[in-house]
Amino acid sequence: MTDIIHQYIDGSWTDAADGNVAELINPATGEVTGAVEQGRQSDVDRAVAAARRAFSSFSRISPAERAALLGAIAAEYQRRGEEMALAVTTDMGMPLANSRMAVGAAVLQFSSLAGLLADYPFEETAGSHLVRREPIGVCGLIPPWNYPAMQMAEKVAPALAAGCTVVLKPAELASHAGELFAEIMDAAGTPKGVFNMVLGRGSLIGTALSTHPDVDMIAFTGSTKVGVQVQQDAAPTIKRVSLELGGKSAHIVLPDADLQAAAEVAVAGVMSNSGQTCAAPTRTLVPRELKDEFTRLVRQAVAALTIGDPRGEVNLGPVASEAQWNTVQRYIALGIKEGAQLIIGGPGKPDQADAGWFARPTVFADVTNDMHIAREEIFGPVMSLLWYDSIDDAVEIANDSPYGLAAYVQGSDPGLVRDVASRLRAGQVIVNSAYPDLMAPFGGYKQSGNGRIWGNAAALDEYLETKAIVGGIAARETADQATPRPAAAL
Ligand code: NAP
Ligand code: MG
Image (cartoon, rainbow, N blue to C red; front, side, top):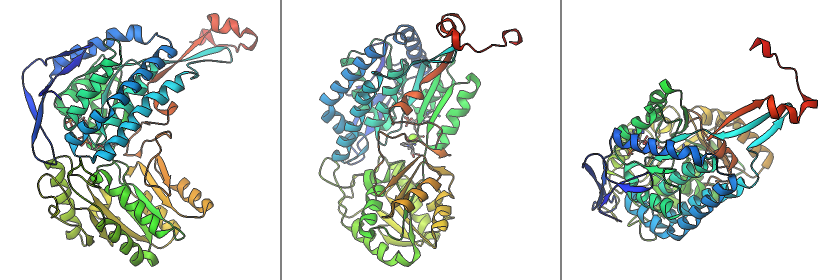
């Protein structure tokens, strides 16, 4: 890691237009770990121009050549995987074991899309016309900091697979991970201008990308509040905007579920990465008659969690920043004030780890769905337990949310599980597990977004435009199936 992190534009490391930097802080220790340049509009302009120049050639290379590039990136990412895991852990405090898993997920994005390119139908004839799926153009990619190793990959990999060129703006809290990501892209032989990285304040660099007339698409992952801003900023230039936003995912424990397993899933899902997971099952819905037993099991599982230096073998590191810690404290206080029952955890820092921004894994019971802690995304290690009286009641509570990112169902009757899953208004429903499936499409209903990531073809589709070629050669080849065209009317 270098002391000051610079911009990567048009195939070279370059200084930002002015010399301002922001300090980077390890949230586990409070130590300064380096500094990141604060890019400006002119840096974005340079990066977009480089991406535009590169697009004219990169968009026309064959899928096989793009697959070879993705394969080279996957190999280089794998080779530097341990460095990336450490960078993430230093940047935002994720326990190293989780950082390593996220690196594996990132490598999978590149390698699985490389595989898909072998037989993806970029061109198909349909009746008398040809349908081509073409890269949309220059893409501004804006990921958050909570799983940065994976979130940069899950945007860059499908964009390049489609033949797009990109300008990435990593989250400031993931700046070392961003720097290493650019080094990987460079070492893998990514052609000049295809991948560019501009660093700086989200509001400035993000807005410069969202409003830029020469950017064709923005892929954004982050809070719903900023997502709304991005959509508004992108509207005057009619960009495609793919949004992956916040969540308040429901977890329905059915009456026939294995309660011990369900409690473990609930705790793992909410508490891993200190609750900073967009898809975390933060609202656990339990049959009222099972509430005492389930609460006991959850308390037991939370009491067993270890907290501390995220480079060690712990379940929880710190939250990512002082601001994030303050947000978590505000919601814990709000839960107490609103009359939820504090089962374990609570305000302040845990005894065993009081340096750094550590929060206590906290569980509230007797939560009702109108409380702030049930409606708003906390993005910290705070679980809400709610009681339900019938399956219909559970589905209604689950769907009564402005969000619809993920949902979870625990149960042993496959028919009932599938029925409940199909009634939930969420983009990925996870059955008897705490973890999403990266090979399945993932994204939000309602205010959780409008895009899809992962799922190979689902992710690729986000970055493609559809073109129909009618008449001419396409029509001649299929003349016998030609349909009459009302040319005179057009
Ligand atoms: P955030 O504050 O919304 O920031 C997200 C990204 O946008 C960062 O790179 C940020 O840069 C940048 N940004 C800030 N202001 C901007 C603006 N005006 N225009 C364009 N970009 C701007 O979110 P966060 O705190 O980083 O991440 C947590 C949120 O992400 C949570 O709500 C979580 O649910 C959501 N999330 C969703 C998914 C999903 O797949 N749906 C996955 C993970 C996280 P700086 O940080 O450098 O300021
Ligand atoms: Mg932020």
